[in-house]
Structure formats: C-alpha cells, structure tokens
Length: 236
Ligand code: SAH
Image 1 (cartoon, rainbow, N blue to C red):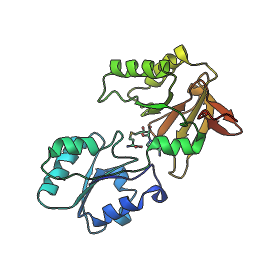
Image 2: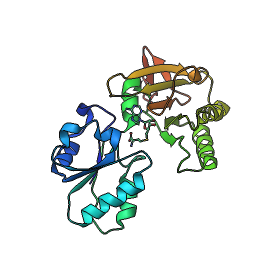
Image 3: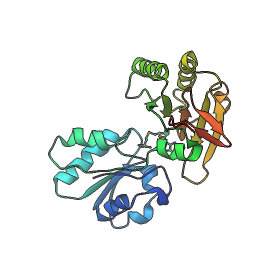
C-alpha cells in the first residue's frame, strides 16, 4: 500500500489512510513524516530513510511485501503526486499488488487557505530539477504561462537552487500582468501555517522555501476581500 498522509495535521489524514497504517505490519517513509505519527507506529517494523533514499526505501518495501508482509509506504500529501506511488510500481514490476490510498495534496490545502484560486484550468509544476531536466521545466513553465493556466509551483525554492523561482517569475511576466495575484502558503495545515497574498511583481519580497506552495493566478484571477479567487465563469 502507498498511503497519502495529507499536508500535515492528523485531522487532514483520511480515515482510509489511518486504517491502512493500522493494518500494516511494516511502515516505510521519510523519517520526518514518520516522526509525525509515532503513536501509529507502535509494534510495527519501521523503514525510515532520508530524503533522496526513495529507491532504496521502495526496494525494501517491495521485498518485504513479496515475503508476505503488509507494508504501508507513507508519503506526504497525495502519494500519486510527486510521491512514492510511481517508484513502488516501477520497482514491484507486478510481483506484488500495489494499492494507492490518496491524500489531500498541497495544491488543495494551499488553495483552501487562499480562497478559491483553482476554479478554472490549472497546471502544477515542480521546480525541483533533481529528476526533471531544467530545460524541460523551462518549456513547461513557458507553455503553462502562454496557455493562461493558473500555475501551482511545488518545491519552489531550496538552498541548492535559490534562483529557479526568479526564473519562473520572469517567464510568467512574459505572459502575465505584473498585477496578477499570487498566493504563497507555507506549512499548510501543519500548525504555524502562513499565507500571503501578493502579486507577480512583488512575490520575491516574501520567504519562499521547500515547505511552501506558490499559486500564480490566470488573467481573470482577482482578490476579493482577503480571498484569491479565479472565476469559474458564471455570469453574476
Ligand atoms: N506528495 C506531496 C508533494 C510532494 S513535493 C503532495 O501531494 O502534497 C513537496 C512539495 O509539496 C513542497 O516543496 C511544497 O511545495 C509542497 N508542500 C507539501 N506539504 C506542504 C504544506 N503543508 N504546505 C505547503 N506546501 C506543501
């Protein structure tokens, strides 16, 4: 089983995710996620790995499942969105059945906090170039901006690549107005959540890191009271 834990707090876990962890004999995951759920891990075999230990974690999980154990691989948010679901299936190659249990992804959590920015077509782009070539990412940013999509950026800024977010913004400014609303949500649903409503012009004045999701509006997106809203298109 590959289990989505949602963006943070226990109250955004689904009952199905909780039941899957309860039923597992082995729980595998990135150690900071496992540290969020110590009470759920009593009496279980644990495979904790560091970030970037995904392939090793997937192999161990598949081996234990092949040996007959019930294994839950936990991922933050939704495991099928930049999570562990794909690598588990690639490593399992059909040898063991894999069930994916969805979770609330960061885009949903951030959107709920900002208001209603994803009411129309949107594109999700990760600015991590660990697994996707930078040229591909540039092409996708360009295409999504040209298509007037609302754009959600995951992995927006890390120490290793502090300038990707600047480049992304420059590409956006080729197609979008500097006054386009931008929402920046950090630690959505993890306690200490912060949310900022700004513009494409001013967005770099705020802290953006790996715990942040950035939502860039389309040409219709507006701010109503304290909410970021992309009209669905209804006539009022
Ligand atoms: N599978 C996860 C995404 C993993 S990629 C999901 O579906 O949500 C990791 C990125 O997700 C982070 O860099 C950040 O951009 C975003 N993210 C994850 N949790 C978040 C949270 N609680 N608040 C804001 N952004 C979050």
